[in-house]
Image (cartoon, rainbow, N blue to C red; front, side, top):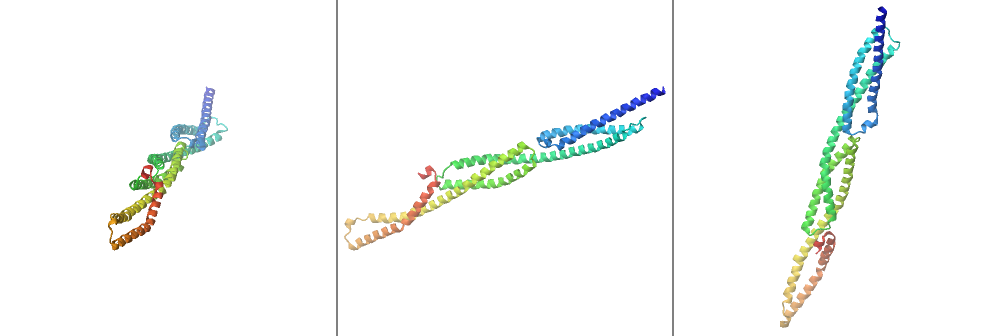
Length: 309
């Protein structure tokens, strides 16, 4: 009976020892696998939602492993009471201490990764807000510039002024959007592992640079167009309302005289003097006409086909 009891105890001790060894090896493998997942770049390159799902699964598994480790610690403390102590018991207890270190390291890595994912999610949300503000403006800006670049000249001064003012408003909007674009580029560094989002930012940045280039190309055109129309209208009004009206009045007063009825030499001399003065006046105003005509020629490149007519 005593031998049977001892044999029974030895079998039980051996089973406990076998279970301890098997469980410690299993936990060692699992904890190292968890740690290695975060050492590999493959985890960092995954989409954010996939990262979140993996972390939730790992957190659940790690909780189970820590519970198993706690039970193993209880088993390890009772190994001292075995009837026959295995030769490698010190090594087994040392492995148990190493398992605890592995568990702490794995838990720390999971915690850090969860913090990084939470921070990344914040940056992703911020980036999406910027894109929601920026992309519609980019679409409308491209439409505006395509329409304006295809349009040649203005119909009149009023339209030239409207185009000039509209472009000034556009440039002011562009100035405000430049800040959002800068913030978007800054956020690109914070979402480096979110490839689809990063590609969207790069695409918007390229479109932004093209918008800046085209709008800068239009700016001097509208400035020159408006100033040319202003100068033309000024020259036109001056030449028409002052010079032409005065010349027409003097010509009309001259041609109404019936030279056949001029029998007074003094009146004839007066008429001749008037004609000479009129001719000299016309000659003097030729420079005004030439300046006006030059301005008209310069304006042709800033007028629409209908405006030239």
